[in-house]
Length: 480
Image (spheres, rainbow, N blue to C red):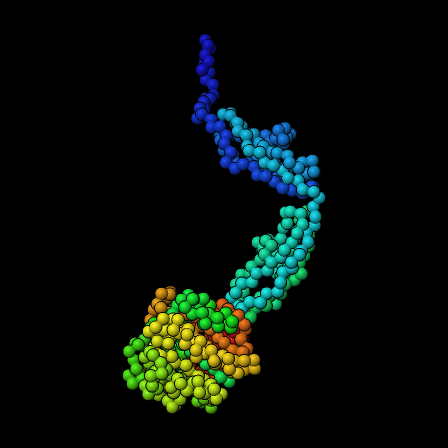
């Protein structure tokens, strides 16, 4: 306030701001070394904190750079004389200053345009699988990549390899190229074609002689590549292995029912042919309707003599339960060797090992030995030599209940029996094939025992309309 004899006047108010003690700057992200080619620029950057305002001064080899007063600095076009130069930045405020660590600039000689030494290759997958295309290129770094599908750039596909999303039938025939570029130019690869086959299904080849053998209670990881099952593993590696196959239920009996009739009639392993007589359509009935032949070769069955150690387990012999088939075709297992030697095997051979040989009561190595002893001669026969008409499926009824899901159900296709090994063998099989496909109607898009039934029926040209869950299933035609 100012006053005199004539009066007084009050000034405008002025505000005093008292700041806290200033914090000296610190650097949280140091500038990084940079590598460029003659003619390119290089950018160095720093992240600093402290009381504002912060000021920056970049230095090149100890000398301040005029106008380089931001958190980042981009050089002019480089020359060979810039090679080895070091760059630091001094960050300062009212409380002090801090100097960054030094970043080194490497300047390579004049850029070499990119060249491609390994072109992307054509890929063949099944619907739902991915495909990976890759290229090997050389030239002055850095190289950049841009993949194109049918001449349109693919967002984010900027590496030396590109993996597609899960494929659909619409992707069949698509072409893929990659443009590789650097400061000196660019080069476009040759086109690689993507072939997308249908998932499973397809046209099932016809076979004159079809065989099935079933082991017991063994999870996929316990059988495949197991030291206890070297023979089965050798067959899986030589012929075809389903890596996505889930049994349908627990315990055993329901899985055998699915393999013969496409239905789970019961999950009670105590049921017998007399307590559970079945008149539903089944694989043997369809064989008879088609005028073809079948036999169920049974080990240790009543009246077959003590040919093998191990007991007969009727629930592992599902054709015994059906009343609408010719039971005279159920014979002792010794007949199998005779029919093989005489070349008089039927169109469908159901091979039923006893409770020890199928690994139910004995170790899985016993089943492996049984396969080598009984199946080995079959595979050496003309049925499985070039020009032969044999198809053999080796599978298990269920896993050891250690898998997920693990449940009992009468609904086919829930995967409740867990993952198991299934091997397909024929003279026309894809060799060393590992199937990763399945059936969208089944658990997690996998194959199951209804797929086996559909495959057996289609292989023999049978009607499948009455075979329960097998009717809408896809056959395992991708193995051929």
